[in-house]
Length: 248
Image (tube, rainbow, N blue to C red; front, side):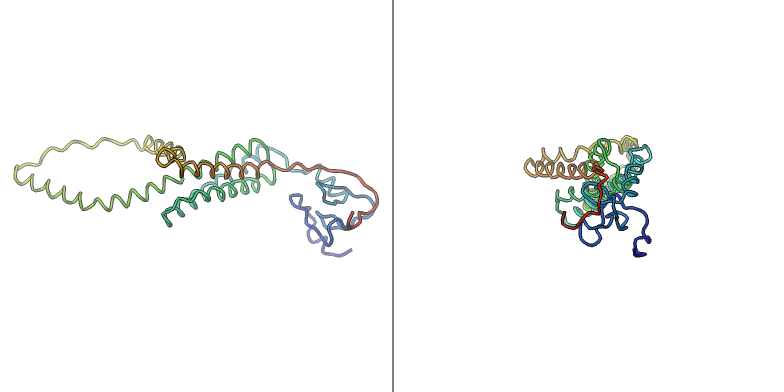
């Protein structure tokens, strides 16, 4: 028995790491030799110790696990939104395939945060976060183009100011200008967020073909996130006697 197996005593239940030939006489989780009794965990050979730990320590759907998954998912959604917006601003192209990357990012991050826990509520959260990330990416894009438009109209505004000064000098008094309406910042931000969330469907009204393709790709991205967060049921079979042989 080598010392290498003891350097990593913690079984990695998420992925079976094969040592030597698949199906050989080593546990594919802790890498220790198996003699006599062994188990099968989703087709991977496991020693009795790892099988017992799998039964007792298998990732459980707890409130803490779900909260961690949400935190990781929100972080990935924000990163995905930035990726989507930066790509569109930098290239001037609307590439819906970025939605696929966003879905993968959200789903992978949530599974990382939950330590492998998945299930229906994780899938729903991942789907909503993916949709929100892609749709809200329209907001920074709009802001970018609004700033460009503002710079283009500065000359027109300056001309209007010059005309105002000329009118003041001719009339001899400053004309009474209408008061600017007060802006409710919270209401403005809320309206902008709702508009952003509706942006995938608004795209269909402005350009039906491109909008429908974008919605379809977004749906695929949401499916990717949902499939990743579905979780993988682990089946433990055994015990079996005799050391498993290569090729069986």
